Image (cartoon, chains in turn red, blue):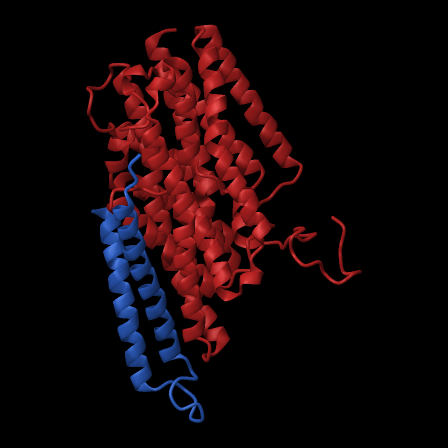
Amino acid sequence: MDASLIVVVVVITALIFDFTNGFHDTANAMATSIATGAFRPRTAVTIAACLNVVGAFLSVEVARTISGGLVDEALISPVVIFAGLVGAILWNLVTWYLGLPSSSSHALFGGLIGATWVAGGAGAIDFDAVLNKIVLPAVLAPVLAALIALTATYLAYRVTARSEPGEVSRGFRHGQRISSSMLALAHGTNDAQKTMGVITLTLITAGTLAPGSGPPFWVVLTAGLAIGLGTYMGGWRIIRTLGTRVSDLHSTQGFSAETTSTAVILASSHLGLPLSTTQVCTGSIFGAGAGRRLASVHWGVAGRIALAWAFTLPSAAVVGAAASWLAATGTGGVVVVAVGGIALSAGIYAASRRDQVTADNVTDLPQPPPADVPAAPAGSDVAA
Amino acid sequence: MHVDWETLGAIAVVAAAAAVSVVLLVSLALVASSSRAGDPAAGGRTPGGTAVAGLCLLAAALLVGYGVHLIIA
């Protein structure tokens, strides 16, 4: 296949991944603010989208380091990156359909690892780095965030216990507008850069850019806009899960969760061990839910999310590997992968239309309630 | 296998300190400016309470400002 054509295909695929990354992660910053009414749904996604675009322009540090570790760069070709991206996009769409917050970074790394495995053998993958940079943080990040959010929420309720509840709730709602905006900005500086890094890596492997160069301006611009547009579309299915299915969140909890997430993400990215935004935010929300009353958290939802996390990297890797194997057969293979990917994406989208979640029904309460919640009194149950 | 426990520990301590401080400061500010602050019988906020609330919010704002600085720099 013509070298410049495959580069164009990879850039477009990377921007599509960036778009899925955007709507997958809107929930991280905004789910609790939407659930507590600090922002109206449309306002929330608009603010998050703008801050993501702004964040994309603030720094290129993550983009510069994205290619370091995990896989042997010498064995990567644009076709391998293309196959990895297809795996990541498909897994992002599946988890979005199920309304599960899974890490887009893990999907991306999983796809790239699977694709590289097929192209260069198991030796091309640094399993020590996979364990240290992905598996361990994936286990520790949500636990850490949950514990901090639990402590913060518990203390906030203790301190404000004797004040007028309405005033406290209003005060924390004001606070949430700031805390969720901070979180969206921090997200923009991190996640838009993953795509910039991938596109830059592709341009380097294709020989268009000199090794070690940073992302050109058009890459920063398109990546920022793609993630911003995705964020604006709002991943309402995931927002619903995090905002209203984990626990009945109040503004005190929302503020604690968002403050904790921002603190953990900033601390981790500045101490050189970047943690997954999604996993930190999900952990914080569960911790904040438990900080008011342990029993108010729907632990069954936590189980489903944990399961999705465990499967994210292997699933994306399998799809990436299959795509890599097919795409390696030549132009025909690349076309088959592209058409197959588009067909599957369209299928998932069509399936999602049957049970739409939009800005209007995102905060509706579950009906019927999840199975792990104590059943409502007999007779009050409404069949869906 | 090498696990970087030191960095993980540092992240835990720094993040916990920052998050709990901000949440506590905002909580204290809300309590101090609450209409039930001071003498419950008197009702209404006191000048002292408003000053304490202002100080707490200022301290929280400084921490948030440092966060913004970290994001931008």
